[in-house]
Image (cartoon, rainbow, N blue to C red; front, side):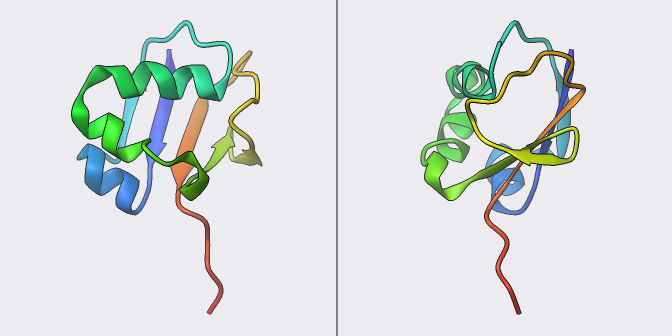
Length: 82
């Protein structure tokens, strides 16, 4: 079981700020593929991965990162300055 957190427009498209996901995914990309297959709203949220950033247990990483031992995965758009 892993906690998935969604921020900004990712949360808007999925309709949830967070959820617990039962997964056998080995990497973040595997998890994204599982989520995309769930429903159209997930497919829309994860349509363009170049527009997303990901963090595992509050550390910025990439979509190829291992989920071994991870408790939390957060998805969010790139931060902008200002």
